[in-house]
Length: 453
Image 1 (cartoon, rainbow, N blue to C red):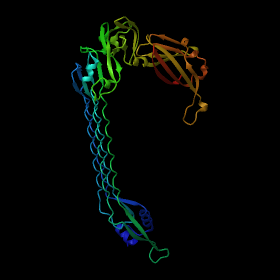
Image 2 (tube, rainbow, N blue to C red; image 1 turned 180 degrees about the vertical axis):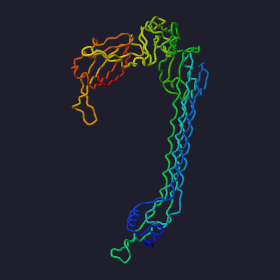
Image 3 (cartoon, rainbow, N blue to C red; image 1 turned 120 degrees about the horizontal axis):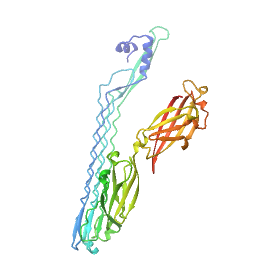
Image 4 (tube, rainbow, N blue to C red; image 1 turned 60 degrees about the vertical axis):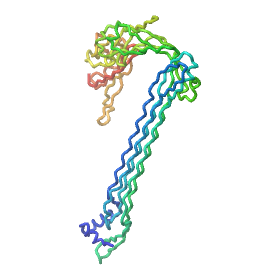
């Protein structure tokens, strides 16, 4: 058992009262020794299996096996074990509790890879009874197994579980001198948690059968084309599409034991059509950059024209038996609609006017609405360093207060229903929310101004 003097000698401290208080506080703390083990690495995920290769065959009444099985997914990798704690020698006879280092957690196991889907099987036939001679195996691959979680590392153990120290206060022989014994403990390090096992990968889906009641192979189809505006203008674009309908209970048509999806597709026929883009807008298509158009044929044979979101287009659609044309009458780039900027103030009293400039120069093509919020500072309501404003007008500007000369808008604010004495010479804030639209397209831009008139 150590006395206070012995403890002070070990630590190089004096026996004064401040050091005694510090020692008492130190005795209430817990100190760690050693170093926790590192966690184990997570196992790798298994790769998914490939889908079964698509198969095309002719049902001629002879027995035929068809294999289009998806590959199995790979197993996930095992997580690595956590490292055991690095165990330093346990300090002896110290005036505080001790906690030994713990072990590292084990790494999680990797998830198993998904099984590949069964392949698509295309069957040409003339006699439906010939399908009974076809054994089709289009199973999905099995999912990979999940990897095992790594084991947690061991924690360090205490060599000495508990010990007792005697601490004294005051000077020996003087009044108030007292000693007391205090017991300290060492706690073994906790072992690391074991890692979680990985999830098993899902199995692949059964392959699907496509039935084609004809003896000639299907011609290639072109259901859509993406062209630049220059490529699409004033030329006919030929499109085609195969038509299909769902066909149920396919297993009853095939050889017993076949493994495919019970619902497949049956060929109905083919539609063909042509699309033509005609340009009748004021703007040249060359000013619109590299944007293009997508032409897509519908089941009816009509052609749809789809433009990218950044291109606003209005036009007229015309259809004949074999040709669908789209005549572009207006075209604007969407970013151009929101390139407005403040102009200057002019006039006074009822002729007070605020100008707004269209930097992109598209106001001949788009509509514009102006929603105004005008507020002036009221010094009587200021609080601290915060300025308080009172709204004088808020609403949609009437059309008769707006004029336009080319790409310059003039807003006659002096004729609004407000007292101009509240804003002239005052600190004001103006917020202008401008809505720009072309047919079904629209975008808004907010302009803000603050100052004195």
